[in-house]
Image (tube, rainbow, N blue to C red; front, side, top):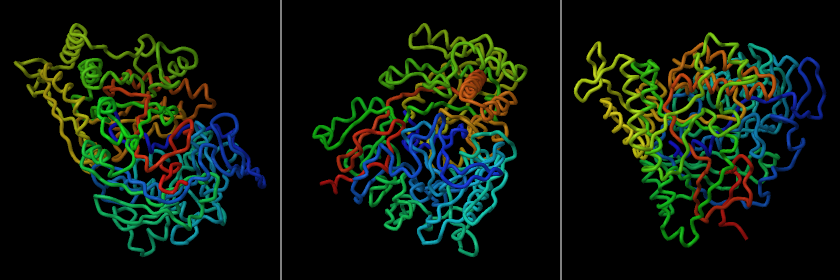
Length: 613
């Protein structure tokens, strides 16, 4: 089960990139800045040559036109993609291009989009991107280095996630007619040139110079970008439509050929996912990601499925390069969650096996790693290079990581469940709690142990309510509060919660984003994704080991070490995950016969059947 359908479909996975394998563009060399390159890959050479015409996984003959109708839950109150505040409208990525573009049939390869090439010196102390001369915003103005510098500066200033992601990119400067250079505060970090390439570029002239747009504020005025779509119609809070640009400057690039096929993309907002599913059944919109195993098994008996007008598919492609940690996250900024014994007790109280059997049709596996299901997940006892890395920070990590494998309690039977509850009770007693009557209270103050679980998706209660009932058997008073998505996001941004349900989607190439997830600096930065409030010197040191890994082997070992230590601290209550990605769609839309290895290329690679011959 996914908290939000978009949690996988639109994930841009980022991380380590071995730039020594970058592909060289046929342009002049400058020893001070390195050779110009058109692409870079994780290992080996990029799959596609310079000036390639299209990705192998697209249909270059796909017809253009028609409307794609999609769903969103909750509401939105802003079309400004940068500030962390406000609830952004879905689909804004259709409007804005980035410097580089990720191919979905390679684990981590990027090719030029707004930028035609990049270069960096041997010590990787900076990177220079050269913009395409033909790149234009939808109002006809050229995309310039000034726009790139403006976008970078404002992203770091206004959004904690960008501030953490670009924390080692200290400044951007115009260094040529079409060149912009990003300078780093450290050398040898091979990921920094890549993450700069993912920068979304906004038009400076719309957001400054007396235009009336304030980049620091939410707005429902139509914004412009350099991407394939422009905003067509806005119905505040209820729907937004995007129109394909006939004059899109980049439509013939190799990264775009055969893609961006729908004439209109429209997002329709619904109160919750159950209401949205009923609308999908009725044909109100075209595409659905199924997040509930029980509904997938029993809820698709309506006529459109039986008649073949709604197609169902189970695919692994989008998840092959992702490790997912889906968890209940206690806020360690608040007592008593700052006590590891309390957090461990809460883990013992979660009977996954019983919930999986009774509520989830036994469709899931326990999520036992922050890189679950990938080669980066830790297991057993550390050895080899992983052990060496852990020993280098031995005084700053739990002693148990060296001699005790990480494991989660197993329930599913009355005997096992009772044993887990006894262990939870013992841990709570060690943490200073005792049972008085039906309540678990702080032994020193008499204050009852109570907390709130904040969610924005009512369907999650099918899992949370059985857990709440188990906690009550311990004497813990846990309550569920369901709020709309806007209020939820605002409270999460401000860390105003006791416990939430969240998801981290991890790349096979982790890097600087780890600071945003669990680095000390992000623990108190509003808008960061350090939901648990982790501030730990050992974890900071291991993040640095990941970021500065010299090769794939060291990256793998450092990531396993980081995973092992995060698990050892019991920061979250791991939930569950499936490698099967369930989609359903009406026959009004279709896709190529084969998906790319690591994605669905949705919606860009799909098209309307209305115009098929």
